[in-house]
Image (tube, rainbow, N blue to C red):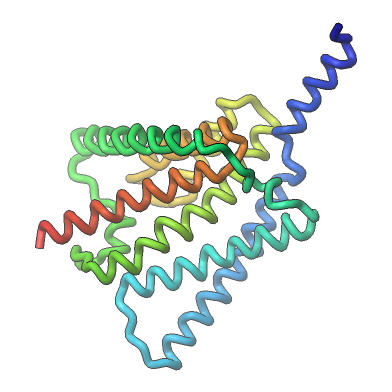
Length: 249
């Protein structure tokens, strides 16, 4: 027979499951420290290129600087939150999930890809042709070679998803979820995810992606499925860009 204290204990345990052992200032501090590391690592990369007298392609430069930038953020989170608070990696979302998460993630990929295409199409009808500034920065001359594609693929489909999911779903979403119900946390984290990417023209598609990623994190209490979804989505986008560039040329 359940007693009132037992029911209260169950409710408390559910609350503790969401509540993060870090605060907003911890997240900001980790990102700030990571930015310092990122600048330092980028400077090291630039110095190494100069000393070696190398002339890397635009894709190679983007990949190296992406690795430096995201690597710095990862170090900041590791030192400022994981090490400083003596937390296991599972606390920031690296929790094992069953294989059943894979088909759900693949289904989410299909839905997200279709939704992204529909939203961009509707936006083009309203505001005219859409120039994606992210694509322009990756392929400034409009041509993505196979070598460039192979350079960019690991940066965009491995490094970036890993660190972005650690920050936005592992840290931020769990922090918000411990202080509000699911949908406000999902929508707010998705909005911050979109705004963090700066470019206004793609904020709506990024907002939708942020919702899908937050819902996946909520479902599995892990960022492993969200990393997979994010990685596959980015991989599909860069592959389509490469195929369009190859077909166009």
